[in-house]
Image (cartoon, rainbow, N blue to C red):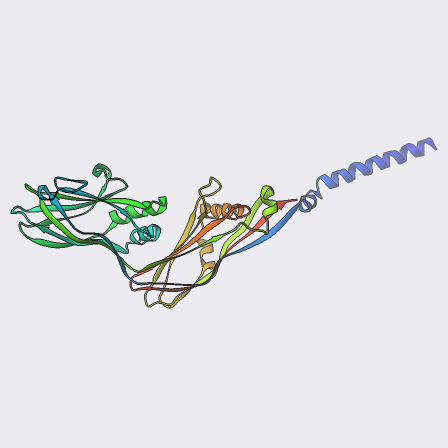
Length: 321
């Protein structure tokens, strides 16, 4: 009888070992699944909104004199600094970075010697750190109109847009044996542009799991935008935190919509690189407890007329229980 009990005990022990092995190997995934939960995120950012715009201009100065006869505040022999701060700085910078604008005006040489008129642009009023965006030679006692645009101007405003900077400086500069230049009707002329903004979050769907987010997958954008205009429209979608945070950086994606066409945001999916997908994941994670600002920028040569049917941020959030 004692031998039977010993044999029975060994069988129970072996069964327990086998059961333990099964649990720790074959059923480990089932156990993990029981301790996790997948939440499908469909965060609607924009819905049924319209944007329209026509060409506009931003005045720099109606008139300023360069040279000994025209010494003004912030003026030295042959130069004048103009600080600029526009109302819609992000849109202004983005349109110019897309090549959709120029600095135009007229220069009159009131001296008997030929002169060269130059314009610099910079983040400060120090000419040594500024970029020359254009120059024009003006004969003695003559007037000329000018329009400065191109890669140097575009690159400067691309940096302004990415940095979120709202102020810049124009430095007007004259070169001659005796500078006496009159600059008038100086303005930035911009092709039509518009921006739509909204603030989204925090999300109530997974706020309680903010500290236990394990992974975010299936990242994409859905929705559509229709161009009602007669010319192609360039667009840029930018999503970033409402306030600066180390949690994530703003990311952006853009495209051009043909005249009279509708763009399906699903078409962007194959174009997302690893960095953009990571930023999208960070944005969804941040939405658990914070708010994000979404912006849609539009610009077109002949006028903006678009309908944003919807823009939806998609993802699957795996959280621990």
